[in-house]
Amino acid sequence: MLEKDLELYEDSTTNQIAILIVQSLDGEVLEDYSIKVAEKWKLGSKKNDNGVLLLIAIEDHKMRIEVGEGLEGALTDAHSNRIIRNEMAPEFRRGDYDAGVINAITSIKAAIRGEYAAEDASNDFDNMDPSVKWIVAGVIFLFLGIFAGVGLFSEGAMTWVLYAFLTPFYAVFQGLLFSWWLFGGYLIVYPLLRLWIVKSGKKLLKWESPSGGGSSGSGSSWSSGGSDWSSSSSSSSSSSFSGGGGSFGGGGSSGSW
Image (cartoon, rainbow, N blue to C red; front, top):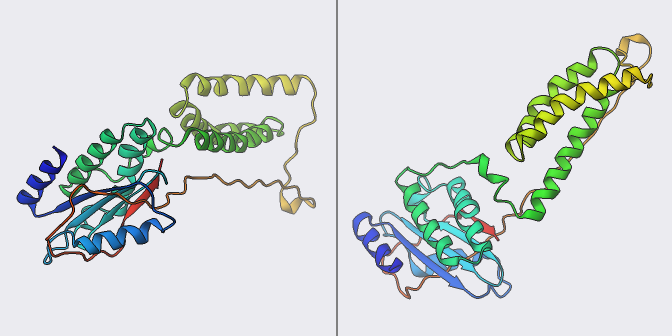
């Protein structure tokens, strides 16, 4: 059914999409493997170089969308990356490979038509591997917590400057990504903790200007780990292509699940 759909798509647009599914890359680099297949199959027409290869390596849990030079302007690296992250990887993690492949093909065709947005930041966090998601969340909240602590124990107006400064960050990371009641908790708990700290007579941090003869400073650094989107390859049920294309300059994107 999918093969017939791709044939009809090629007849109506001349764009050629191939799917290659292999059991393993056997140690080969994903991008190298993908380029070799695309060029050997000569995907796309010789005039337009409008071929696309979707490559999936089952045992390696890797995949790649390789884009011919003639389609790089329409099916950009950003489009390919989002298709892998949002349309394929979630389905593959659930073990539904058919749905992932169908989603990818549908989205590839939509991107070529100009109907698929390259960015969807709201889904990036949701589609992360759960373990990576919680590591990133932990690092972010540690970072925000350090600054909230500095604000709570700061003398004078600085406590409210930091409170206001951190509010949008808590709105994004607590409200949007987790739950708005967590963000509401920050808005309420911070002033209450500040009131308790002041009433209990705790020592407060005094901020001095450099010209005041003394200096005090604090700094923090943090890094957030992201998914390493290593290449993958895909395989197609068709054994021969006669488009005469094959000019691929490395456009596309790679991913894993």
